[in-house]
Image (cartoon, rainbow, N blue to C red; front, side):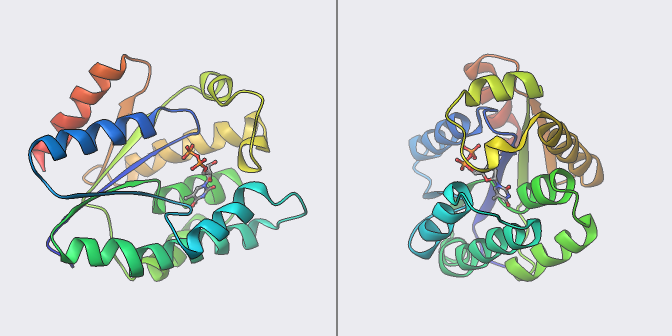
Length: 202
Ligand code: TYD
């Protein structure tokens, strides 16, 4: 694979990962490292259109269709944005990636976990993050932070989000080398220090 570094940030909605990924990006920039800060779904181009459907389409969407749309966005993102950046030696920081599909569509929508993992593998061409940080948050706080203005995914209900949270923790148990968990019930500064500690170990 490329000579860069690939780090993904994962967790339930409202877990604070977007704030943390921006802080880490700043940390690297201060050290004059070249980064690419990106996200799924919908980094740019075609992805923006897929994101619009995934988050805002208000008709029926089957769970399988939802999975394939996230996976289609991922394939495009990996091929056109992530891999080229890694080949250039950049540090790629990605807000959500393969583990979101396992947690949300696998555990949340209760699709076959092994199949989702296999499809992820096809979408990424086998690329895996060097480090994944999961920001764990209790479901009540997560839903409170999301508030009343919910998108299509955020409207799925508390049981769904309990399954998603549990899914992320299962992923961390399955792949302890790659996946680390940080408790989100802490100050932004303390969490940032923990993130930097994990990254420095790489
Ligand atoms: P977004 O607004 O980016 O949420 P956040 O700021 O919490 O990352 O919305 C992405 C939504 O899509 C979020 O609810 C998680 C969901 N999602 C999946 O269900 N499967 C996936 O594979 C991905 C990447 C995201």
